[in-house]
Length: 454
Image 1: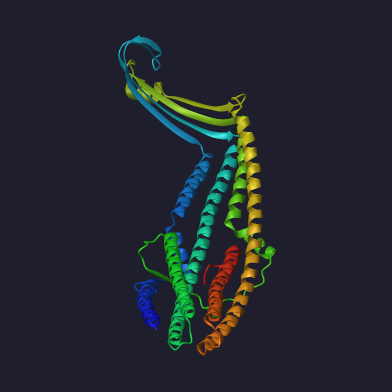
Image 2: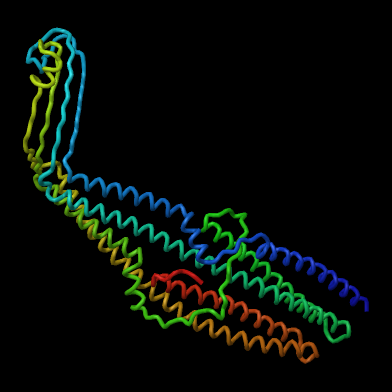
């Protein structure tokens, strides 16, 4: 007789603590989901991440450098023009070039020169260098798109993880409320002698488990929100709330074929384009290196003039007439032996080409494997989603029946808790299956080049 009041007091204390916990949970949930929150959809999250990501900016800078290299190589086809000038005062014994005399004196000198040269034949290395730099530029631009694609997929995955955890919080809170009600019923039945201490302990254990589920779901939600903020490069103190899709509006998913997806993805996927452009660049790199094994021919000319204070003629007469000279001519350069540098560069270029071809094929093989897995994952997600729907309906019916029977004393607390645990699991499984299905569908859209929207 003495234990019952102690038990009532303990139960009331536990219920009081539970009330504070629920109030804290409600305040916590309200602050997370509503208070001064900025609503954001998937498209906005992706756009914000792409706009703020520093890796993308680095890739853009690299592409800008490649663009300048491409422009410069095109200018190599034009004649070069170079001018020079000098002025000095000489002392002592020296030969005066302008007057053609050996002097021992002090005099002033001035010289000016203007030269120009145009390549006539360089083993086609200039043309091939232009083509190589163009492909390197296209490769860098594809690298930008690759980073954007990878980032977009990370945002989609994190966004859907937020939605999953948000629904798990709500489901966990509902289960916690249900276990509170069951504990209340257990206490009432204990007072009239229909329950034992074991039944009370069982109900309290279920309540504690559901409290832990709420806490775990809230922690997972907070972590996913932080991950999304970091991907979007926004302040971690900014309150955001993601918009969830309506389950009834989930699209009817097509029965995708592996080859159908691969054939489209291989033509648009930046990973493949990047590898293809690199292969093309290395092809022209071989031609550039080979061209440097051949003789080169250029045509050039120049004008020069000078002034010396040793001459009896005036500055103007020397500069414009007596010391004014012109030159025209061809320049032929024949590479005979340069310590194996040109031949080594040619051999290395061929090795780089073979490596680029191998990298391109590896990229295609990896894409094919990824798509095969993605299609299989989508099919599995469809099957799992349908199965969890059926499982939830069955477990819900079983739990409701056991709950009613427990209230009239036809089943014990262990049977009721087993039914509730099964119901809880199937409810959580359905939430996870729903968003897993959405994510797998978005992955296929990603490889098909479709917009990443919900």
